View 1 (tube, rainbow, N blue to C red):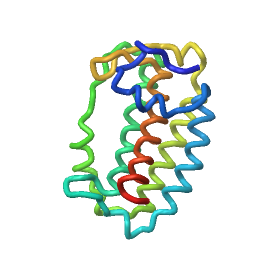
View 2 (cartoon, rainbow, N blue to C red; view 1 turned 30 degrees about the horizontal axis):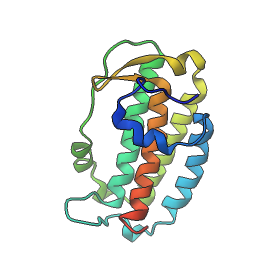
View 3 (cartoon, one colour; view 1 turned 135 degrees about the horizontal axis):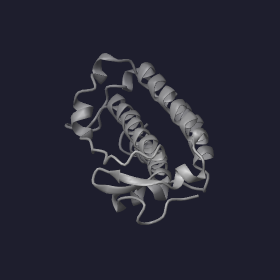
View 4 (cartoon, rainbow, N blue to C red; view 1 turned 60 degrees about the vertical axis):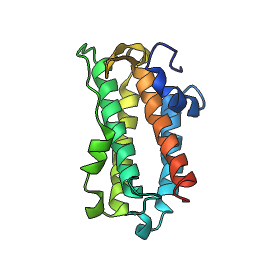
Length: 169
């Protein structure tokens, strides 16, 4: 099943449109393999590279993908479990500037992403069709569980494209 208009903030249309197919579990699993192969091909010395002043380093981009996955997986979990508490937004630029990427290796950042992804995959496997269709409020906008999961996958694809196109990786 794919998310429907009205199940999420239209800001996420671009991310969701990048995701092909209907099965989010299959997508997350296949994206993991492709993403791991791509990220592991990046030389360690490129980890602190940013393509322009005031842009994130490669490691910050990967940490951002990981942080966003954590946030959206938590949102999906909260809504799937029936908690009606409106969920807050987060400031990705503040998070990126406070992630201490420069103190970490690229290999460590990649390993963390893969660990978080495995956790997300296990979470998705625990959901049934009723849970996928549940809706809540996240960052003052409607959010269905399935839409949040599609955003995770599409957000990853978006930033991989940025790394390839703008960072020359």
